[in-house]
Length: 293
Ligand SMILES: [Zn+2]
Image 1 (tube, rainbow, N blue to C red):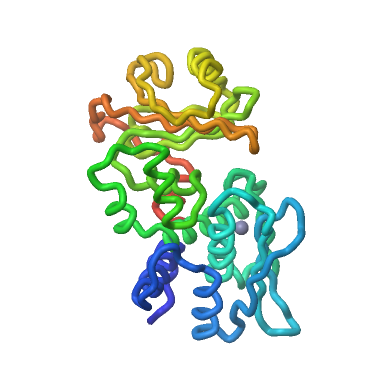
Image 2 (spheres, protein in one colour):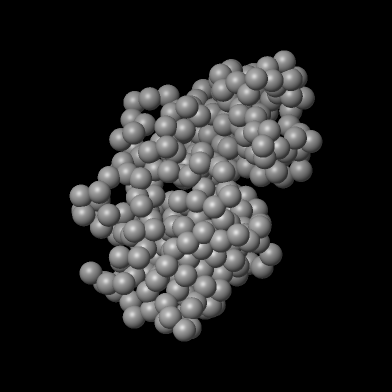
C-alpha cells in the first residue's frame, strides 16, 4: 500500500485498515499508531503514554536514543473523547509533519488558535486527519440517516467514535447539505467562534467572534438554566436577519462555555451560482476539504 499524501487520504486509509482487520468503532488509535508505524517506517511511534504537563493536550516528540517517536497526552483531560482525538492528532503530525520538527506541542485553544499561518496549517491538517480516521463519512452517514439532527444524536455518534461532541458536530457540518452552524460563546455571553456548513455559508449565517449572543437567546437560557438540550424554534432576526432557526444549547459550566447548534431547516436553498464563494472561504473550509497540503 503506498503512502497517501493528504491528511484526509491518510485518515481514510488507516480507518479502512482498522475496519478491515475486523475491528469496530471506536478506532483504538494507540494500537493502530504502534502497529502501523512499526510495519511501515524505520523510526516508528514506539510508545503512547500519559504525561503530566499542564496545558498541553498532546505531544509528539522524537526520541533520538530509541530511534523512535513518543506520543504523549494529558490524561487529566476530562472531556469524553478528547484523549482519543488528541492521540489521533499527534499521529497525524507524525505521518504528515515529522520531517519538519522534532517536537510538536498541542493545546486545545479551540483547535484553531495558533499564532502563525504555518502552525495553523499544521494543526488544521492534524485535525483533519484525526476526524477522517475516527469518523469515517460513510459510517457517520449511516448513523444519522433519516433522523433529525440534534445534540443527542450527534452525542451518540461522539460516543460511538470516542470523539468530543464539538469535534463530532464539526465533522457533521463539514459534510452536511443542511444549513446549520455551531456557535461557541463564553459565559460573558460573547461569541468565541462559530463554524458554518456550506449551505449556512451561502445564507451568510456566520457569527463573528466578539459579537454578543442575541439578547432574547440569553433571556431564554436564564429562564431554563438546567442545561436543557431541548431544541426550540426562533423567529427571524435572532440568529439570522431573515431566517427562522432551530436552536439547541448546551451549557458547560466546567468550561464556562455555551454551545449552540443552530439549524435553518426552513431556509430555501440559495442559488449557488449567484454567490461568489471566495469571500466565505476560510481556513476551516480547507480543513473540511482536507486539502491545503
Ligand atoms: Zn498539533
